[in-house]
Length: 267
View 1 (cartoon, rainbow, N blue to C red):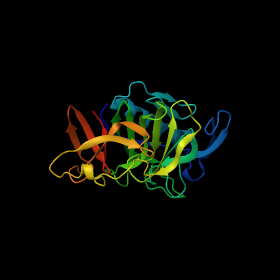
View 2 (cartoon, rainbow, N blue to C red; view 1 turned 135 degrees about the vertical axis):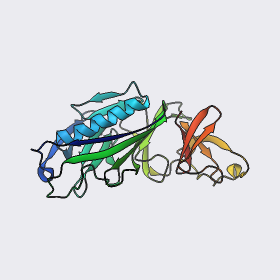
View 3 (tube, rainbow, N blue to C red; view 1 turned 90 degrees about the vertical axis):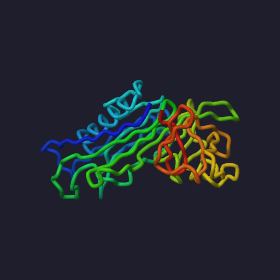
View 4 (cartoon, one colour; view 1 turned 30 degrees about the vertical axis):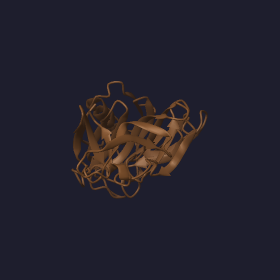
């Protein structure tokens, strides 16, 4: 896997009325195997455009086993399934839903449609998608017409291991390497998150541990989470005095990206 950034544009059909085009889609099995959750989203044309764009970028990044389902607006990658919709009122932007929580993960309100307002007839789509990750981790970022260079956090997924039970786990959220609320669950237990909207589950801050504060050395340790009970495979913790945020580093034969003080592998 690696890093990929794609830019997309398009025009919604003339029949699309931005202010009245919202529909309802029912997701079955979001909070339990038989649950039904209604999602208010922008018309299928708008949501499918972003679903296809996100899927293309995921595949272009190297996730060849990714699966897309247009009927349910879902993508499955590294074995993790999530749902993609375009929603919003004051601004229209992509939102992600997944099993275990009814919370949506969004991109901080970065507009999907150019010059949107409640009475607008503008229908031009201008946005970009950036993806970083490897076979055990994927981070998705989104930017729109009003800031073509921005990378707003959208959704991240990381594989790991529960060191107490030896179970395979997922850690996921809008941003898994910052103070944003994130979730953790076992791979085969879709509806019971043992970390449910936790802030800062990655124990300790970079530079906050004395063993890492060696300014003349690149000191790294495996990244643990949730009271040091879970190992996150593709992340390492490094010394903040040495590693600069938003830069890439070659460590051994592998490439890491430093996002908000935490490093994850991208190649």
